Length: 298
Image (tube, rainbow, N blue to C red):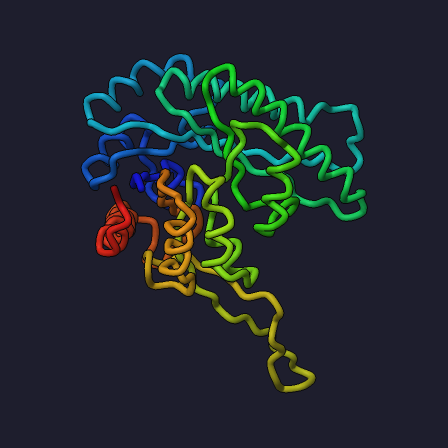
């Protein structure tokens, strides 16, 4: 597997230190990564700014001896309630992904990671599914012209469970539609990580990795002089290998299923230890150490 660091980890969205993209690339190389995944939005690589960034980024990649394998698109292929057909939300996102595909080809990247759709309560589920499938098909067709593969990450509600995700992949039915498979979601929802990874591995081109702990939540009930357990735990990011996700089983499933793609580390939520550059770097290094110890990196 190819070790890859996601630029979103240094984008500042969760209070962490910010690196400009031109600084992030050599920084990732110094940490020992051979590949980067670049976020397809500001402050990193928005299509609005891409034209002026491409040549400097190519130079930074070349001088750092590192490559960009993946661009991360941020999509939600749902049609918000109350909007109807007035605002072409899906068309905007198809155009966004097509623009990223053009940029990816110029940078030498061959994968764009997308998300599906958050389910909207009250809307027909089959209609939401069909809309998502139709949009991904068109994204794939437009990306194919640039030699780019679309990878659906198991993040949003529609087609979330591994079996549902594979069903969606079958419905999309495009050779350049693959999976960006994540352990975080199936672990939180109680899937068997080995079995899920084994199922997903043959269709996966990227795996995105981060580790978390569950923090139990309670609410004080003064009329009972007691605490009421809340059904949903708080989840907090921690250094890789110290959380509840059984990554040993997950990666064994990927290996047994034949996966040998891009293994990306991300820090995309508030992190134990804070958002200082030193803590981010320590966590990024811990991921490489964990992967190297288990001989997972090629």
